[in-house]
Amino acid sequence: MFEDCKSRYRRFERQIEYKRVPRSFERAILEKREQGANPVIPEIKFSSPSGIIRVQGDVKAIAKEMIEGGACGISVLTEEKYFGGSLKNLSEVSRISPIPVLRKDFIFDEAQIGESYYYGADSLLLIASFFDEITLKKFIGESRRLGMEPVVEVHSLEDVARAERAGARIYAINNRDKDTLQIDLNRSRVFSNINGIKISASGINTLQDLKFVLKYCDAALIGSAVMSSDNISEKVREFVHGA
Image 1 (cartoon, rainbow, N blue to C red):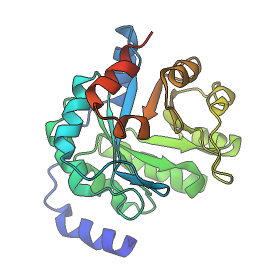
Image 2: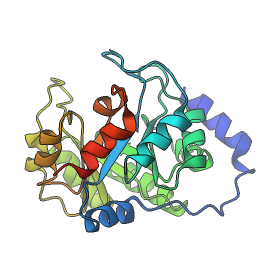
Image 3: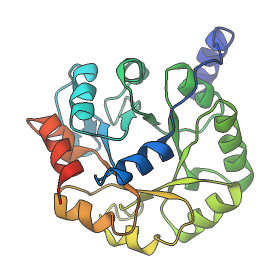
């Protein structure tokens, strides 16, 4: 898989014009808070290991609904096997979006960082537990070289310590225990002392859930609750403007 990624990236690496300036998730989150609204990052994913969430559809239309609902950014799954994503989806959303777009995938290889930039990502997810400190720092640095501030996902205090030493600035706090797969929104509270922008992710299904995690985090990433809705723009609006 990753050899394919390397060879694919090398084929178009020379075509990349490093002129695109990625948009800032940090700025988008803080601006939404200043407006008195909830910073919500809805996620485009059509399936999960648990099953199908939504029938594959026009990602541009879905993204436009999310934008109309007041999202401060959009997360796009590009992993194909388990989440029904693709790099094409990332590219299509990035082209029409005026707000930052996060590439969410299993990033293991440095070539995937350039690939993310090429397909229009403004940021990409790095899972702290996948890396040692030196490699994580290297990947963060390469992302920044291309103008993308990565979102570093943490599951444990060990992950947090590693990410902090590697210089992370934006953190995704995963509310799902990676061993038991159980959701516990209190994880957002436990990690609330992280020095940086904190995004609560996983298991946020209701406005009550959102209000709880935003006591401790700066923003929330919401996937299934939005993608399973019959009216995506209205669902996002409910989360963004719910008191």
